[in-house]
Image 1: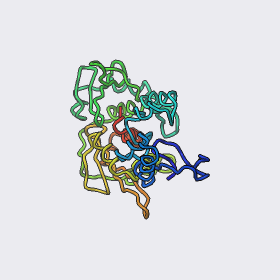
Image 2: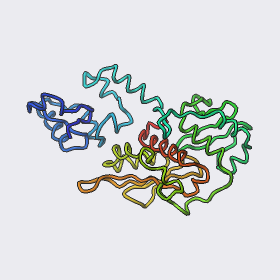
Image 3: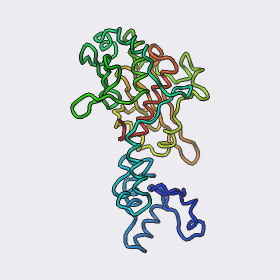
Image 4: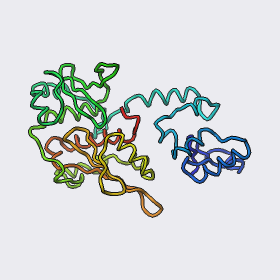
Length: 306
């Protein structure tokens, strides 16, 4: 593979075309091992970026390492400028834009909050295993994070500096509000686990509305350990299915099941998402689509998850 662990694509470098310089390859590759040996022999020391990637079995720093950009990059003098590294730090701390199935930006309608404010906090907590905080507040565990639903301020909040701070997470806000509006009873889980094609609105999950797992396949399709680490960081429960499988809890009583089959020379990697059939009681198809997108984003972020 022509792209080095640092992110430089050697295919577009004339030095590579002339045969003057070979690619370093991903940190897990044979090319990386050979390049490090050559650097040690010819220069007396290896590239710290490539050496770190090789040591930690990271293919590409920008994609796979939660510590990027680290001091190996900032100490320079190459391959990236201070401005580029500063941009990476800034944008990695921001929530990516959230889009609905029609590709419009996600917005939580005020009518949804109006409807939610009519519901009794204690009843909701009994039905969902959320925790009552006050007459207008309840909290829940989203994967590995504590999130507060503030009905008075009409927003989600996260703990920061010993206080609850409003969080900009429109997709999570939308699916949380929809869930709390629609839940009416306690539904059994773990008895009937199905795929999207088995749901009543299976026709929805086709074409542009297919569950978005492509980015997960790109990231983890050939990195089984990386997938396991990300899922376990999110407090996923390991299952004896596929090459790796985990039950993740975006809400205490709403599990999602992620199954990964690792790719090899013969087969392409594959990721499937399964559900408890009871999810249809509280989410329409577009809500299920949004919930999967938000959990998949957390898996992509791994230890960087908000």
